[in-house]
Image (cartoon, rainbow, N blue to C red):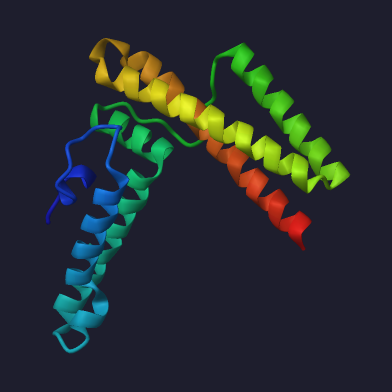
Length: 173
């Protein structure tokens, strides 16, 4: 499989909008072929290559499965590297993030599991809007700067989702 892009590994066109079912089916097909158990009796070199290919498939699948990671990957294919630590230079967005984090802190302090569920639903809606916005920008090469800004926002939202999941786990205990 060489150095093919993540999209090429799964016989997909490099685009933000993906058929997730097709991706999952293709992933399962490919991973079955290189699963390390199939190479248990093979020479050590073949075992190592199968393990490396399985790891590469897993990484590619995880990247393409996640909208924010897929957006970052698409940008990287165009030479635009977004670091995980990149900041957003949009004061209104940063203020919104601060307000969301404060709201999440209040939900934690009050141990309001129902409130956390409502908060999470709002985040899902925000994520869907960002995904649609990125897809529209990605489809128009003249809007790649805007796509990059949206990808950065997607990263922030991912971090907030992780915090929500952690809070849910703490409140469930």
